[in-house]
Image 1 (tube, rainbow, N blue to C red):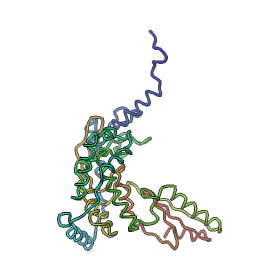
Image 2 (tube, rainbow, N blue to C red):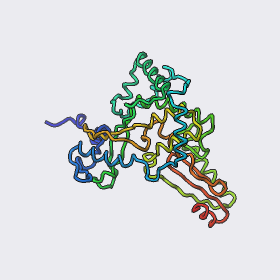
Image 3 (tube, rainbow, N blue to C red):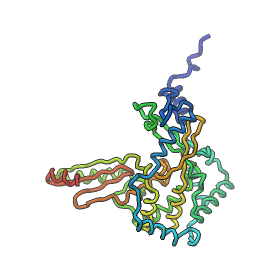
Image 4 (cartoon, helix red, strand yellow):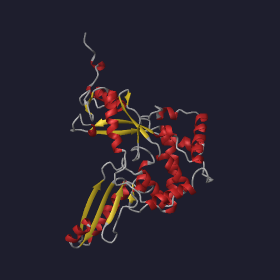
Length: 354
């Protein structure tokens, strides 16, 4: 008996289904089905063992650099700030978010986004009835009033994909993807609105920053760079550019240093306290098919894929040194370009090397 042609599965359909399975399980089915992964003392064979080896590797990335150390004076300044502006002694009136605002945010959620540890999908959140949305607004407003970020929302579920043309057994050759709670993302959006409004009103971010900021998109930065180069070309100036990409930049964000920068930029104390709660006691686990590693701490870094992460990274890199007389600085997330122009090519090189 032959299978009718219209019932035979097409190769494209099979690949599409396989790709969907890869996203859900954190494995790449185009590669070796069950590659062994080299741990510190042994080869990991089972999915649980592999998840643990990969989690151990990631934990080393989520630690501050060895040079990350504040001076005694700076530590004292931070301690003084928290003593004077602790949530327990400082009465704060924060604009509450309404149920209508939450509904508007829920409508914008993407259906295809994978859920976090709670396994609550965006599709399920979109089915919340009025009573559930009202209760969610109450929870968010309570968090704002108490300057507290719920601990359950701070455990990141991580899946990993192997990088093409890299050794399969090397745990460092797997790219982590952070899966965050959809409810957490909603609250982060509410928090980000407070942060963005305050930063814009006080003009806190450097003008060279683009990306993850209102009216500062990728296109705006590209137009700015093209304008600088075109202007130099029109007046016969030579232009030199150095492009820099910081390795594991989001993973290495120094929490204590970020807190200090928020204080020095004079963010409202309630925002500093809320973000301190957001960064404290963060954890992650690695998922490999249906198996999971033990929970590991995140001592540095901000989750890629989070709502607040990119904005906080902009704050963290707000003090990149620049010499406006000799160079122009362009920033987009963790990508940095330094531009120098001069009628003398040797001077261009000298300025970029300085």
